[in-house]
Length: 88
Image (tube, rainbow, N blue to C red; front, side, top):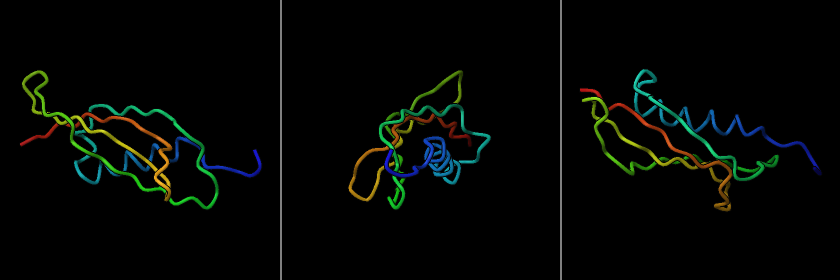
C-alpha cells in the first residue's frame, strides 16, 4: 500500500452509528457488512441507509435497512444490512 488507510471496522462503526441515531441501540437486531474497498487517507466518507423491507418477526414489527458507506466520488467502501425492531 502506498499509504496508511482506515480499517474497515471504522466504517462499519460509522454505519452502526447512523442506524442507532435513527433507532435506539436496544432495537438493533442485527448488522451485517461487506467490505468493498479500501478507504484511503483524505477520503470523505458518507453513510446512508434505506428501508428496503417492512416485516414481522415473532410478532414484532421490524425494518430491514440497506446500508452503504461511500467516498466523495460515490465509490462504495462498505455495504450491508441492518434489522431494526420498530417498537411502539
